[in-house]
Image (cartoon, rainbow, N blue to C red; front, side, top):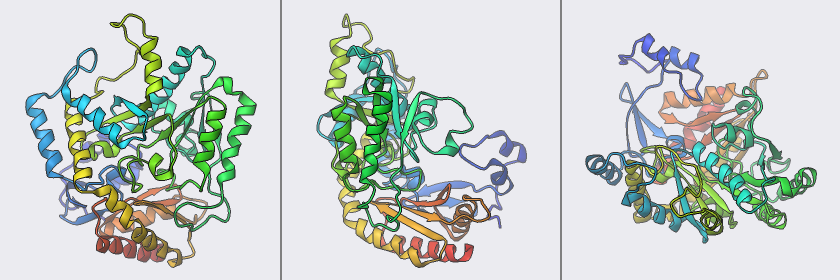
Length: 445
């Protein structure tokens, strides 16, 4: 049943837009059009309030239409709408870079700006290769990702990513190898970090033995895999990856496009899980989703390697960057977003309310036999739904569409339903979301 009664869009207009990560044919038969957003809610064309159960796309932890961010963006548009990204600078990029380093683990204090999470991953991988060349180890060009990992939509991102549906259509990518994921039998319905699965980090040793450390530039993993359905690292797993990378002189990259700036109840996933990588990629929450922006934080030694081997000081130390690197308006939004996270104490709020969220989502275990697993950490949860008729994505799609009918936006991906409420969510909103999802799962099953 469609709720869209007031759209002025023509079929030609609908057809003209080839939508991203969307079943275009189904959507254009029954479009779900959002018209505005405020606080923790969207509004659709019929004026219905839709609770934002995914914080946009893991982006809007502060909620929507935050006055401080809106004002910062409006003021910036009036004063400096664009500044050349190459050879010239503006003050806000340096201010934002310093602010970002305050959220990073100690030592990751050099920030390179990009336009998105996909660009951040591409930047991290390119600089990892270039770093080893600068160190005189140019054979270190290969990468190791992980099954069920997601690292953006670029060629480098799908190469190191491990979600089959995102890879099979495109053919050969970068030379990459993949660790197994950490969802092991017996870990189902774990609250937080599982005890089982740490041993899967030792598969990295097998890959290093096969391909030799002298050929491997970096290992890239999400501290918590979000797009695959909130796959939380087992206890000790990330620490073991760090140990192995150190032993074999391989960079460790954390893709924190989803986990940085509060989602885990910590400044970063690295802080939440107690492991410091060499590189962190980020995007999404850095501007609260208001305007596209990404960044990569590097250890100073990586930065210094380029500076010390850069030739004359007027020469480029690395020929890399984007037209929209450190865009003035994005920097203004980023400064305001990070200031609001600190001012409102939202990281501490997520941490203090995580147990309430955890207990709530795990109540769905008994909703139906089609719920085969539930995983959670911080303000994130993934629910695995049993397939029907050999179509693993069908039931999650049906659940998500039914939830939208009821006034809740949740994400469906492969065989999972994914939840990531805003950091500002009240317990009553959590309860309402979880109760509605429980009812919907029963109906669909």
